[in-house]
Length: 329
Length: 294
Image (tube, rainbow over all chains, first blue to last red; front, top):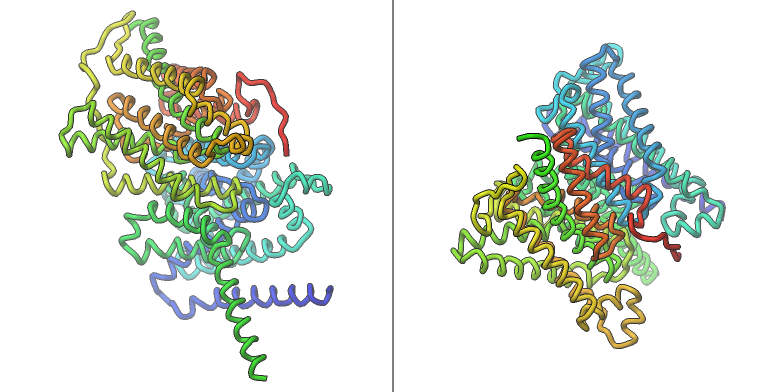
């Protein structure tokens, strides 16, 4: 049994190493290509999708306001570096700490709510933050946005082109993915899954559900704010429309498409939803209609998302091969 | 305008908005009580009511009253279709899946409305004259009177329907205990369908009577929907007096807050009230605490 678990762990490390290798090698084939820019955004969206997945996929707690933490990260970082002489790296950390603190404070009352009520409360929170991004014009620049945000730099390397940004974003994203995969295998990961299945049962088994839910909410906000800060420093311009309710729904769609609770699914969902509007012009006009349909159809017919679907398909094929091999013998 | 007439003005517009919120809240309560679902697409029925009416007026050249009736019928059909296509076929009914499906339906309807009618704001003509009346120095549009009148009418009809008609009683029975209701011969599926139809109809009516005052566009559903939800949460998820009071209270606070504190934070006020209620008294202001079964 122990041997089997170790085998499984080994295989997971192998899969991740392969995934990371492919990601890190991709730019070699895409030098100076516009597609690299799209891949930077896929990286940021993957980071956000993984963050939301920790909360929704692992612990089963929905948030319809995650764009607010993304926005908070972007604005705190943007404001600190444009209005004060703060180093961009320091501002990234402060931004993430701010979002985590806010999540920790509102986490206690908000995560007491369940199901529909939690969804409504997080939705309300997201819209309140969106209103503040728009109305605190003196700080955020209001609807016309905040520009002139400096790039991050590391010694002689300035992250102001697609190639450098690609490595900046993806190294952080890969790190968070690895930590998340690791988390799902730990005691905490099992406790979160127990809360997802039945909070009452989890508590009876001695899981401190109240604290654990707030902790994962805080971690999720922390990661989302890092994504926001990266977005601000790579784009150098931010405006409130990127952080509204529609983007919260887009994030939700990403992880539903990819598969709840699957880290690679988050990548798949983020990749699909980021690429579609880039390559299908029609998609830009129809985007929210298509998101709506995807949410309904996938929840109804493919509740474990594309990754779950692919796994099932893989098992069927593997089964067939085994069966025919057995017959040949 | 002196201070007291300004106050009267704020109170009047607050109450008329509040009446609308109460109606939208009714829609939430009716579906929630019959099915346990919180329908995130409720606000879209409100939007559909207004947009259908404008569309019918401009393309079919029908008189206003006929256009309104037709718009309510069309919105109700959308509600029925939604239940048949997305809610009834569900096999494993987890709350999370229901949240996601109703959100999906909400943005699907909104997106479809955007594609069909565009992103412009439209105004519905007022039901009667546009000449304002003056009360204590405050101006009041005849449309405000229509809103109060129609809201009152819907509240009374709603009360009569759920208290005295056999259908209304059957729906209430489902709300208490669907299994027990089915044992005494009530077709629970039909009642669920009916709840979607009734709440779509009430929602669209709310959207129609507010459209001449506030204009309407494809995306008004989110804000109105959440404010209606806020009203029904204050009222403790009932389609009765509590929700009416909740709606009026919300409308008043919002309008006074916009007038005396800051107009740009008007919507934030409603959402902060919503969060406070959810945090402190999720069972509503007027309800006794209940213990929850698990």
